[in-house]
Image (cartoon, rainbow, N blue to C red; front, side):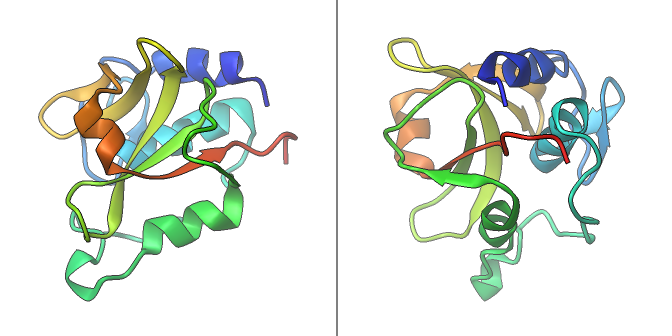
Length: 146
């Protein structure tokens, strides 16, 4: 799947308000909802029904639900193999479960990513040192439509 197409789709969501468990461009989404919406635009139907989830992503139980789902549907990449359109999975605290997603908009110098962030909605941010330290996994979208 073209990274340019994925980034263009993700940028189309910028300005969408943050709304937990939602995935409607312009109306509301969270970080997973953004990824789901981009998936629908570039791949087609979502690969599975997303069950209700809490804001903590089962952090107290140590359940890596988001990481397991990513491994089921996306292609793992090395953390340093950056390309536009990659899906980024973050741990918000060291030792915590991975529970935040973004899409790499620009790799290399001036790296940026698009994500839905509580209190901000969908925004494009610098992939700064604090964000890079939180990066737990990197994935590529599937190469073919389903």
